[in-house]
Image 1: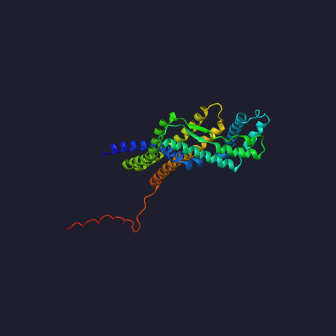
Image 2: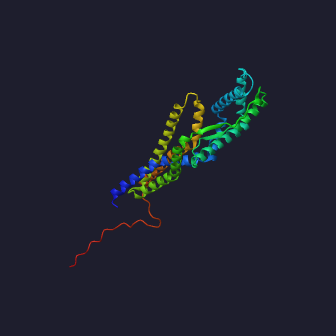
Image 3: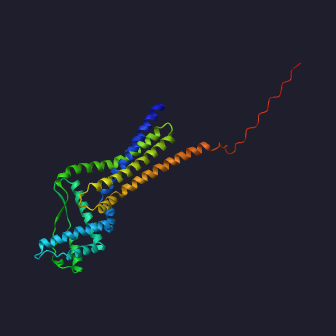
Length: 307
């Protein structure tokens, strides 16, 4: 193959590798990170102790308990002075191990329900039952001697997670992610190896591949930051921004780490290739071991003219 054609093909393959690297990392994160229940629950577990999330949970659960008391108990509405006590009791409950266990259980149940719907064929609304969490909160309020806490009903209410009308499109996207999560990273590695193998100057090809990988990592980190701002800006007014930001950071933590790894690895390889080239150019020529210096040549003796 002529050198000019090899150089063009090498550049194309290296450019494709740089483009596929962040896409492959994102697809792999979605297919093997978010789609795995154990990893999802582990990523969400630290949020149980996040102050913003705890505050949002305390207000939401407290308001739900008060509504249940007003609607189902055969008593006058819960008096105003009791309402702060209810929220304080729920807030103190969020500091206990029972709350953290309920948090993990709720995330696991919700994640399993969503995965079953995405991998199944039923076209029903995806719902979860949060009655076990309500029962634990009720027990805590009873221990705190809250008035009428024992009479709060623990109903098995179906909480909608995904509407049935969105399941078809989500299933298609989920199947695409499962395929892309494996093949995109493989294609990025193959293109990079092919571009380096076809290059006329392989050291420069390695440097270009490394810089492209670093650029992809930086682009991915920037997209995560922009996506966070856009996600929080489009939330409804009644959603707490700090709690939503904490959830976004927890879900994208692994992806953010992968983006910085791509950036660091690419810059390290590029710097190593550049330094090795500089050292090679400045290194003096060494003699082989056992070889001696060539003997100095002597001018030939002048011939005597014959008489």
